[in-house]
Image (cartoon, rainbow, N blue to C red; front, side, top):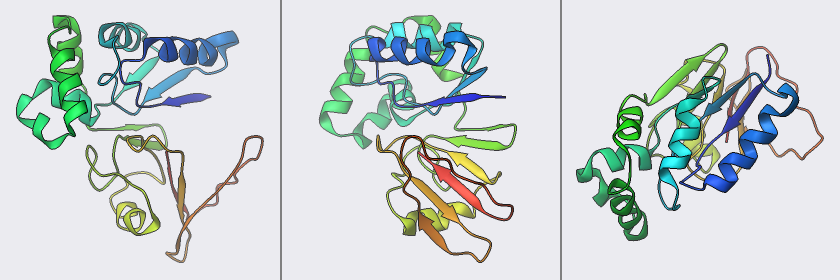
Length: 187
């Protein structure tokens, strides 16, 4: 089965629409997993939530912006522009989309993969940026491969069979061979 992994749409419907169109064109993927933050910042929160909610081939988890809009006491944990955009978003979200966001979970296990927004250690709020953070997250994984979002920066961390953690750098067109006994975290 081919999967598409997306994250951090942040209310940008034009980007969401184009990416989903590309992923589903000619059945390039069968399932899309969204690693959270459907809303926040961008001006089209309902259009983005509708696109994710209405497509039964898309499965989603909740991100820190998604949960913050549902719990106004969590807005103080965000920077000022993020909090302001979520106040604006909350005034515009439909009841269907509030209900949809409310039903999303912090983590998902799907086939051989684990999905969280921040990190396996702290699913909503940790920015996984370096091997030291990755090191402690590997112990919290329920699968050997985990996909995350949140940082808005592509990365891959690997823990080999000896317990060594490294950051992998790979480029378009290159493949990555998975080995038994190793664990991976992809953003």
